[in-house]
Structure formats: structure tokens, C-alpha cells
Length: 118
Image 1: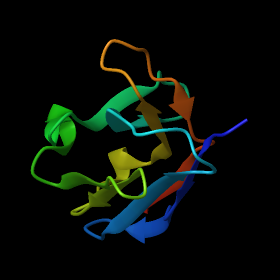
Image 2: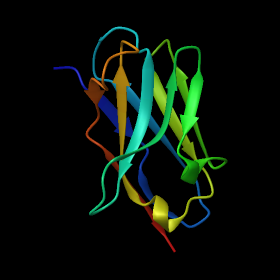
Image 3: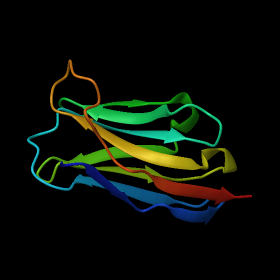
Image 4: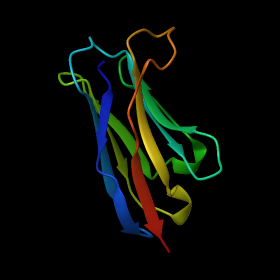
């Protein structure tokens, strides 16, 4: 079964930057929307940012001005540039995608750990 593959997580100091990447493991059609979620220990999985249609973007208030989502439609890839990282950004980051605007997030990655040290 085709799934999404994330990369780019790691350990960084407060104020540092990381760039996450996500692409499908195989051919699954063109994505209408892609997004990034994160889940910290003991907390629910929350939306960080998503991009849909003709590059309509949406960000969680906590990351506005620091994170930027982008995509490469030729590869069905989505990226998350994270700047000015804070310890509270520490979480497992998951990418998600769907082919239809009215669908649920159909495809998920396995997650990549981001740890921000103080």
C-alpha cells in the first residue's frame, strides 16, 4: 500500500531551523491538499499547516510567521520550513494528503521526530 515518507526531523537548539520533506512511496494520483500535523507526548495530534487547491495555505496560530508550507506538485511532495524553533515545537510531525477536497486525510506518513532543546 502506498504511504507517505517524511524526512528532515532531528535535534536542534532553540532558535534554530529545520526543513521537513514528505513524498509518496509510489504513484497515488495528484494531491488536492497536503498538510503537516504534530503530536507531542500526552497530547492530541494537531494541524500545523496545510496547503490546498491553488496554494491556499492555513497555519496554526502558534506557528504563524515562523513556519512555511510549500509543495512541489510535479512530485506530490510537501515541505515544512521551520524557523525560530521553540521547545514547545517538540513533537512527532506527520504529513498527510488527500486527492479530493471533500475527503478526509487519506494518506499519512509514519512521522518524524523534531526535538528543540532549550
